Length: 95
Length: 486
Image 1 (spheres, rainbow over the protein chains, first blue to last red):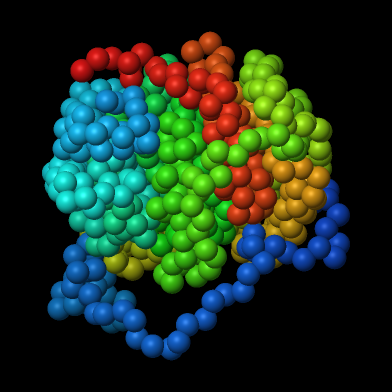
Image 2: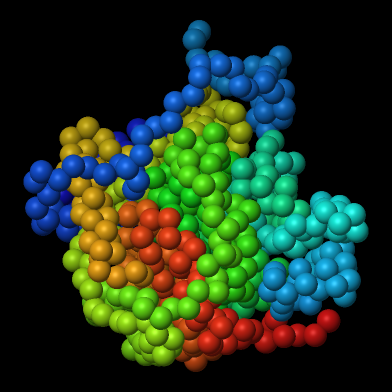
């Protein structure tokens, strides 16, 4: 499956990753060759094979619905780029 | 002092030959002197190390020392360490001071170990050469023109260079085993779920696993004892008892059935690497093991399947770096989308962007079945290859990498670089444990023998490696850098 410039720009937008047109052009080439390598999978017959998401056959452990974490907001916000009154600051979203 | 194993250091500490503080000071001095050029550390935590060493010495004096008390080690900079910069080798996290300890770090601290600092790595563990670090490439201590391997290249180089007796790494597609092979040390990737991933910065969550890197299999066993175990904070960490991994270390290998996967001795394998690996296998035969050829027929689909699954998981995991809650933020964003896009464009390096784009593309509408679902189906076939092989044999052996360490700057092409991981990547897809142990040299550059077992057979793997190390001295070879006195 060939990859085009627009595919790279679309993926970059979905991933919220800024790319210049020059960078996108370079990634068209790189990603195209990676996908070409990946396309080898299509040659394999996997009819009826269940997808494997996790290497061990285990079920997700459940726990009681209880509060186990304490509030550490101010500590965790120490590594944030911009906070005020316990809130994360971002550019205005709603006018 | 700096070329001893953990087991030897414990005996010296117990005998009072030197204190943990003296040992720690000696190694910190070596790091300060030698690591400028080697570049194996991103952060060296002098003060915390000396404080931990003093606490360990006090515990020993009070008769409360455990098997790891007072032993220095280093942590790959992918493990969150409270109040210490934790970067994952990325500009994105250059200012990130972790507010908590990863479970692995917590356990190693509780065991009395002394962390000397955080080791260099490929950015977000994406790479096989350590050339993808924001903090610059690491050199191979055996040959400064060669790479140390990756992504745990800093951990491997620091141990090989005699800067620290052991280090903790992570392995998503070979990132413990391949650098261990390239640097001539012993490394273990445990079974998926054996060690908690909590606080270990995520790359591909269904593949990532932490493990020990050290100078002997015995040392890896001692470290795994402290690292393994169930953790409520990682839902994929298995609820299963942790054996004493040193317990089987005395078991003779007579009757051991070794399988050699024919696909691991095919085209692309350096003949000198092959010769060293076959010599190593003869040692096992002399110890009473039997050897037969086996087949892992889907081996060549492992790299393609991995390069769908790992980037898909990475694109999802790395969406957390938004420039809002932590990590790099661009200057003067005009709106929220601009904030996201520029913060991520500036914070991530080239290889990380490549994998985010591949993962986003293959997961996007119209492509999901052809790529992601297909790769997961192939993943099941790859795991089945191993399950079938372990019906016939106890362990599999082969090279950890098709070549010895390659030259810095030699692999410019991403696909060529990916193909280097042909012998390690399938192991992560299957979730089984694997080790690399030193087994010779090609010129100055070490060769690693890879030993694989079925799920949760770490005790057996460690003993197989240990018996080999009792019969050989490849693991005792040191580069000139580590032999240097003082």
